[in-house]
Length: 445
Image (cartoon, rainbow, N blue to C red; front, side):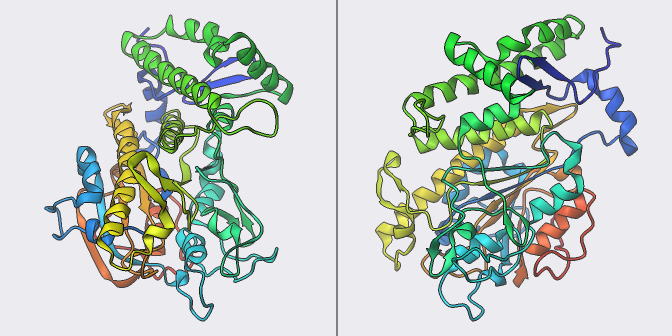
C-alpha cells in the first residue's frame, strides 16, 4: 500500500458526480517530481470584499511591525494571527471622484481589484478593466478544473442605476474578465455545490440531482464504489484523511438541504439552497470555498460578502438598522458601535474560514500556508467615503513567500494595485502594471 501513487487530478466518479480528492500522502511522489526544488504546493489567491468601509478606530492597530495588538474588529483573527498581516496606507485613487461627482460605492467596488476608474454610466456602455483575479485566471486558470470561482451573498444586478448614475454592474461584482465584461457571482449554495461536485452531461446531472431529491440520497452515494476501491489500496493515514474530507462534503450537503427548506423560492416550485439566515449563508459559501481550495478545484477566487452599498440589517446580532445607513454615522457613538459590531461579525466569519484552511494539511504545510487571501474594502471610513488608508489584511504565507504576522504602514497614496502586482509575481505571473499600479510593495514579501 505504501507504494500506491495517486494522480493529483484523481476524482471519485459516479452518475453525474465527480468528487475531487484532497492532497494525500500517496500524491507526494508525483508532486515532488513535477515541482522544482521540492516545492510541491500550489499557491492560491482569494479576494474577499466587505461593503461600506469599516469603523477605522476599531480596525487600525496602534503599533507597527511584528509586535502589535489586534483592535476590536480584528480580534477574531487571534487564532490565526501568525498567518495574518495588516496593511495600512494602501489607496484606490480610481475610486475617488476624479471629476465624476458622487458614486463612491460603485467606484470603490469597481476599482477594488482593477485599479481602474469606472465609466460613469447606467447604460450598457460600462467600461472598467480586467481585475487581478481574472488576469491570474487567464494565465494559470487552466491548471485546475475551475479557472476561478466568483462567490457572493447578494444578487447580481447587471443593469440599472445603483449609485448616482453608475450601473449596478459596478456595485455587484468585483471580478472583471475584460473592461466591458463583469463576471457574475454564484450566490446559491446549492448551485455552487452542484457545480463543484457535479459532472457528466446535463441529463446525467439532472438525473443525479433528481434521485437525491426523490430518495433522500447523498451525492456520495454515487461514488461509494470508487471510494471503497481506492481506500482498500491506501495507507491508514490517507484513509482517515479521505474519510474526514468526505464527511465534510456530506455535512455541507446536509446543511444546504436544511437551508433550502426555509430558503428563498426559485423560479420553480422547489426552494433554492439560499439560507434565510445570513450567517449560515456566509458559512456555507466559505466552507465550500475551503473545500474547493483543499481539493485543488481552483486556486483563484473572489467573494463579496455583500454588494457595495448594501443596506442589509443584522437583526441576528441585535442591529435593526441598515448597514449603509449606519456607515453614515456622523461620529454618532451609538451608530459607530453598531457599525463596529457589523464589521466584527464579518471578520468572525472570515476568521473561521482561515481557521478551517489552517486545519487542512498538505504534507508538512497547510492550505492556509499555501494561500494569499486579501480581505478589505475599497472605502475606508464609510462616513467620509474616503479611499485612502484602506482597511486591508492579507492572510496566508503564500507558499513560503510572505512574511506574516506584521502591521505594515505604507506611504500615503500607495496604490493598492501594487499589492496585486506583487501577488501575481508569487504565482508566476509577472505583470508590469495592473490598473494604476506604480510598482511592487515592500516588506511583506
